[in-house]
Amino acid sequence: MQYPSYIKKKTHTVVHYGNRGMDLENLLNLSNTYYEEKNIALIFKKPTPIGVVDVHYTSKGKVIDKAYFKAPSTLDYNGLYCKKYIEFEAKESQNKTSFPLHNFHPHQIIHIRRVLEHGGIVFIIIMMNQQVYLLDGKVFLDFIDQTERKSIPFSYISEYGHIIKEKIDPPLDYLKVVDQLYFGGNT
Amino acid sequence: MQYPSYIKKKTHTVVHYGNRGMDLENLLNLSNTYYEEKNIALIFKKPTPIGVVDVHYTSKGKVIDKAYFKAPSTLDYNGLYCKKYIEFEAKESQNKTSFPLHNFHPHQIIHIRRVLEHGGIVFIIIMMNQQVYLLDGKVFLDFIDQTERKSIPFSYISEYGHIIKEKIDPPLDYLKVVDQLYFGGNT
Image (cartoon, rainbow over the protein chains, first blue to last red):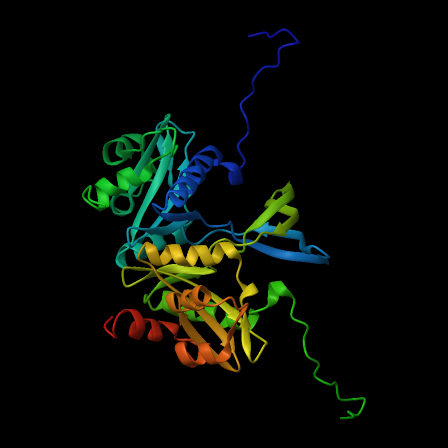
């Protein structure tokens, strides 16, 4: 299609690896702030681990002059809800038919297994095909353990995942799904 | 004392704010690695939150050109042990008679209160006078709530704190104190 020169064509934004999940992250951060302000839960996004190479000191404190992002070995979000330890990872997938597993670092998969062993609640939040799903950590590992596939078909996510409804406040009320799934609706 | 010029006098190292607690931090990181490798607990130091100002992209990934450290609103360490949520802060004090409370950001004090409300285990690890103490979060808040003082006298820490013994592996076995204090010795 030809656009007149005064209309800028809306181009597809290149999503850099570090920014992938940006929108979902914002929704979750707002939801976590809501949960904290209402004193419902204490769940936070962990800062991205960085390796600091150079710093200098100013009257206002230390300024980083050079640093790089490190691969996380745990999941992005963790915290406390109803006396329980909760940890989860949040990912957006542009792919409509399957969710690539290279979205996870190998150590993160090991970590999910360990959180389950130690009695924590662990899950993945996936934004895909205009829906947000919560996929239980055990169900996620079951898939990985049973196949050699490098991606999870969308059909698996839509069948075994639980839809998190978007609303005003909090924008993503994922604790409602957590209530049903891990507390039998009693919190 | 006069040193011969060929002997370098060991000078007292200036500890910058961001590095304070460096030795204690290393001891705790080694202990947490030990706990993880032995599959005893999953407790990690949270990365220091930073505000990224400038980045550039290279073939190896994103490089940070300018950033600054942000004040943390939660505590430095958190994780999962025996199905329980654990969170703590670790501080070294050079002061021998009292522990200055300005070591804590106001939001961290609020956060400690909230972790208790939500049924988590929360405490402070203080290295002071060549000893390492674990001070329960409730005991810490009791002090703050009952006085207007801006520092905790060392006598309070030595009376109500629990000594964490230094050993080889793990270097600081703080979970032994956690066992006695929060699990009645049964883990």
